[in-house]
Image (tube, rainbow, N blue to C red):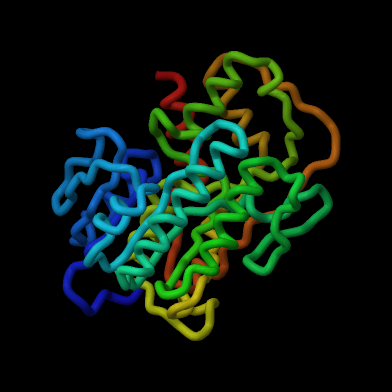
Length: 305
């Protein structure tokens, strides 16, 4: 990473009390940034140096304009964990676009959006996936389709240098962690959630490693470039995959079921066995610090506790 050459950055983070948002806030605080931590409920933002809690609804145009005024960067992390397509679209797409457009109007330099590798088509038989891969089709499910549409809409928001971070499964402890808390609860309570194809790919990244890249991009520590392989395109919209070493469902589901004391149900059938390629992120200077063994050990320890 290159070092920022300007004064400490002012960064707005939506969803600052969530699993990903809170870790990004912490990473920004470590980098000396001042952070406007946007939350819906008072007293839920991380209490860290340089962090100011800002309570409000970022989908409200007046509030969005107020909270981004004078900021250097905006990081958007909010997407409903559940709900139907309409509710996901209202919050994840419409709300994100309100504050993204407010940031563009305010002259915010950088916009970092936490997207997902689910925006790619990962049908059985397809190979590895990089940033040039085909996006998910319309029948891919509400989550993938809405997140895909958010990415496409942000590409049309002129002004800021936009970076779409595309992580696969995000591992890391937290009450709202899908893969460390929510999915394991389903596995514990529903035999159907214990069924999987053992060789199916389980691409993942640890939340702290994802937060590192988000924070570095937000404060300008990753230099812009005319070549997206070297850095975010200045004034453009650049996608970047953020993934650690590849694993399988045998690794993930096997760990969860062992910790919970239930048996997995391994099935045969077609499955995607490719990798989410993160070569672009590595060329930007990012490298994950958390290996698979460490991430699974954290997962297992949390479930046993």
